[in-house]
Length: 214
Ligand code: SAM
Image (cartoon, rainbow, N blue to C red; front, top):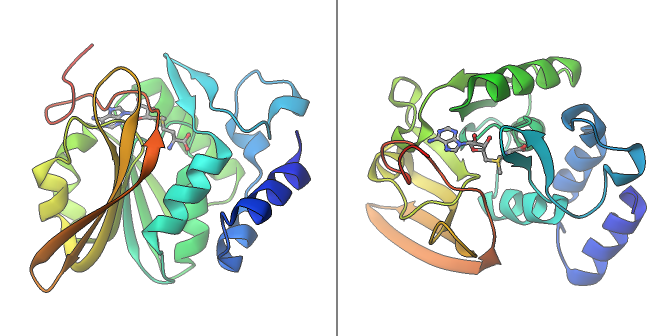
């Protein structure tokens, strides 16, 4: 499967209708963010291993989550779970030169992997921070948008606190095994509303407000 096949399937399914998102996808080469994957598999619509038992997420899932975040130019965004850095690079494109993305990664070797990949992709407005993202990133809060790319038992309270009003947070929520519901949470005029975007399957969120240590 190549880029063209993916784009055609998204068009048919009404995914990634936002032209800015498609432009971001086309301008951030996924091949810079994978590890030991044959070229012909880079754009397969599957998660791929990146080491340490973790994955770079499936392209379609990344498009659905990014579209749900409704990112606007100039926004400040927090991603929890940098992994390869690919999702963060896409968010960086969406936020533009005046925007800023912080992506937290708990595993040292992956934080380094993401940092190197983001340098190769010239994603100058994205910073990778090593640490426990289940607690958010209080010294850079509040954020216009927050994206969690690992399965949460429930949305960590600190993340909701660190979300601006108005703001949007997207996170897969559910058990450690099997699938989770993708939750889109909006904060507006002091009120929190939630909608569910379907079933997805993610590696677990670790840390204090995730599923703890392995
Ligand atoms: N967004 C990534 C990408 O574009 O490649 C994919 C993320 S992968 C599905 C989930 C990542 O979350 C893993 O790299 C994992 O180490 C990380 N992670 C899990 N719990 C975490 C935590 N509490 N804080 C920070 N990162 C965490």
